[in-house]
Image: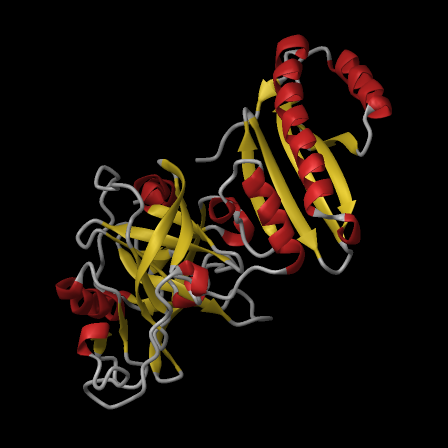
Amino acid sequence: MTIQETIEKNQNSVVQIATKTSTGTGFYLHEYDIIITNYHVIKGHNRVTVKGKSFSKKLAEVIFFDERYDLAFLLPPVSMKDVPELKLGLYEKLKDGDMVVAIGHPYGLNYTATQGVISRVNRVQNGINYIQVDAAINPGNSGGPLVNEDGDVVGVNTFIIKGGDNLGFALPSSYLKEALDQYVPHRGEFALRCPSCATLVTMATLDAGKYCPNCGTKIEFPKKTEADEAPVSGIAKTVEDILEKLGHDRELARDGQNRWEVEEGSAKIKISYNPENYFIVSDAYLCKLPKTGIKQLYTYLLKENFNLRGKLFSLQGENIVISSLIYDLDLSAASGESLFRELFQKADYYDNLLMKDYNCLPILKEA
């Protein structure tokens, strides 16, 4: 199977995962009707946002985690039974030098695949066997599948060594299968594995309400509701409060730490806050440059820039963007609501106008 065939076969089973603090990758296994990812991607959250090639952002429930092996399971937020089946491969059949492909969303890029070879099929780190690969596993790839030449999952992309030259590590599929088989009898319950002895524990099986029934290690279950988790505070909370007032779900809008993404009509708006430079930047991605008539379009955009207050048209590659910027100390619920509402409205207005009057092209949507 070629790398292109591998991507085409598996991309619908691979999903993006985002929380208020991180982003990562997950993948769906038909046999278990479960989405797999890394624990460190969802750590501290009972629900996360999940986006697939066949569905828009949804909230997914965390149903299992294993801190020691860095695994977590999610309930699919929509039925995924119709996507092409992604199967578990046999780690035991792997050899040094075998070709593999790492699929994920590095740096927020959708559905990126990197091909490489297995440098060491059994590299031990902290007492756990990992597959060492030279395929680039970058931030955002965490939790994605490592697949063999047949397109079957042989590992879960887990970590890299910073400063290393493509030193990536994946947890073997044998560990994953063991965890899945342990969890299946408890499907529907929240469960975790004891960090000391790997026994699967539910609230019902806790010894004296707080100890592993097998080894006696103290077990702390996460709080039951998302509201009990560490709340968003400061500028991030203000931004999320404003988004909710404007009709956008704060959890679904999250696109990582201090980043949000919403859609207004046909326009996509990305909001980011960098505490180091103190500014909240909102970029509304409209449409693409037309094939002809660009001079007339530029004239119009420059005139609009002169008339607009607090907003500016620019180009990012061939994409037309309208942006606004506000100093964090100037952001309040009232000022932010006014600024965002006007930007959202103008983004939708200009997107439609530019396509109608200047033959601009719609931006290709990534699923």
